[in-house]
Length: 532
Image (cartoon, rainbow, N blue to C red):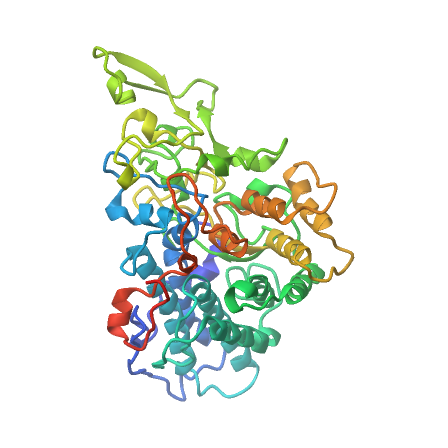
């Protein structure tokens, strides 16, 4: 286990009070039980740690799998097709890809519950310690909890838009508008910024800091026109400048090192990351879903095989075309070889290799080959590619989160921490805001900002300011697989577009996911998003 995880791991197994066993829905009319007495009333920061455990145990529980799936499978970035009936799973991946999800979609429901479970745990803790006297202890501890609540609310704002604002545990409020939720998050962060820690070290890793607050505000202001109808480009630049001028963050010289299973506090540009541990904080499974079984020996994965389901669309892969760009090497494509240079081969038959084969039964030795192209051979309504060897191995595979040889062979969980905000995004957000009309500051231009990222990637530098389209493509290269593609596509107005196997443009209302039907049944005060 990595040393940097001890601080977070100590929070995970704690059961503090029976009140912290929370409901996953938004019907939160539950009595708060407390066993606080004058003898055990919190007087030190450590006294709060046990109570804060549910905030951080919930955070990784869905982010790197189901939350990531909502952000990526609903875009042109990632594809999980059916294969001869395998991996259809009731159509949940196909519905995300084609923008045909309903208010009963299981992943959508799970993320609604995930977000409000986090909000509920924050509110429970704030209520539990409401009697803590005013002063530094209260201000700092409450700031951490409120910042985490603001982050959970940002996820709800971005994905669902119109949600109830629950400021206290037990609140039973009707749905607020997206603009009202935006204003609530903004006011919360601005109120607590003076009390958030400013250090960037192991003690604050995976926890909210002042810089996380500025990064979240920058992301909100960058998307303000989407969220509220009012652009806030200058405000986005101002929040980026707070982080840039802090001098605490810089681009790591090695792009790929940030996504190794051993990443952690030593990464210079992580502003906020979600901590994972293959055995104790499970839920990051990129090794499992991206790799094929035939590659397990090359990456020292032991006896348990990867699942071989996730691939990218050809047109998205084509964005990785800049000469010398190290980000090009985060994909597996073409014939595959062992570490000693010998081909990775499979002994099979012609009919198992290619189900369209009509010749006599024959054995063959086939070299594993991951194609750029992805095609349908089975039921097109089920987005089925067929299940022969050629079908199973179509599509480029991402190894940006480098395969983890120390994964848990039972759960197939990885050790990679998942970056949410990193310094490269601050530079890119500032460049985009200036391109959109914000006043340039500190002598920066969109060209100079993006060229810092290009220089680190060893890609050709821009000789003039990039266009917005070029900047969006650069974001695709830099932040692929980091759960920002949906957010970017909506902001740039292309989330509705057609792509491979998505044959029609989607309606604008698809920019928000529906309030799950199960939640409206539990809480009639909830209002369904338009279109659903």
